[in-house]
Amino acid sequence: MKRHYFIGDDLNVVATVERALLSTGIDPERIHVLSLDDADAEQRQLHDVQSLMKKDVVHSAEIGALIGLAAAIAAISVGQFSGLASTVGWLPFVFLAIVLLGFFTWEGGLVGIQLPNSRFRRFEKALRAGAHIFFVDVDSAEAAAMQQILSAHPQLRPAGTGSPSPRWLVGIQHGARRFFQWAP
Image (cartoon, rainbow, N blue to C red):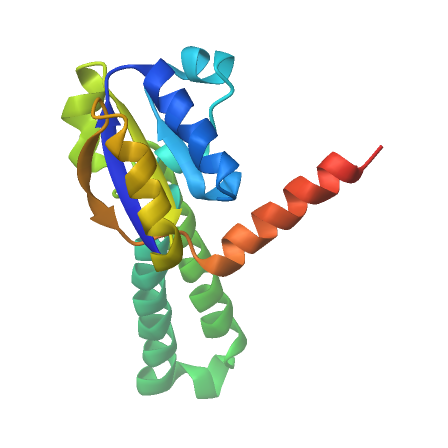
């Protein structure tokens, strides 16, 4: 699978393309619209990017976890090489390592809340200019149908490709959507 990005100035065109892609059988969990005009996108019932995913929480938390892991290893190393672990025991060092890992992961997430998602930074200028980013994850069998639909809408300009959402995550989202549609 590959993620294809497009930039468009008109949400009506984006909505038309989204409906056409949905009619070909592409799951709604693989189609997204990134716009600063959330109300207009919601009014058109577009599959917009969730607010939390617009921020860099996950990526920054991962970086924080790596820093926390290094700090945890340092705490355990101090206990080992200073000889304190043999006198006071390992429990304080293990506890400190767990606290450091959790703290840095949490702090990384807090920093990420203040930053735009690292995958979308390249589109900041277009978004501020009022454009909308439309992206879809397709496999090679669906790419031809997508290109045919998009060729009828030149208002959506190609803006590159990227890595898609993991298949397992799309599967979970698809299952949750089907479950909640079925639930009374």
